[in-house]
Length: 86
Image (tube, rainbow, N blue to C red; front, side, top):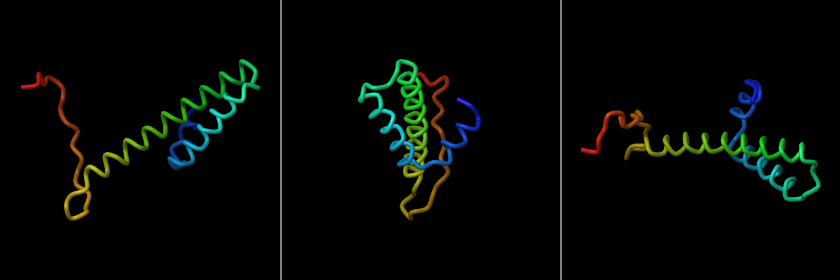
């Protein structure tokens, strides 16, 4: 995916990304695409789903950061390197 395409996806809302992915799925389910067009629609759909998943993950992290007063707290990634579970 080109840098321009990545930037365009970053600017879209989760709803927009999912709607576009749904359009690709409908086109694939229609069964009227050539093999090349079907592959392109599949690839685009997967990219859209990946972008929406990344956005959902970011929103989820922000929600988890909210403290009891409704303010955002710094998000610290858990350090799992070298952690043997003890």
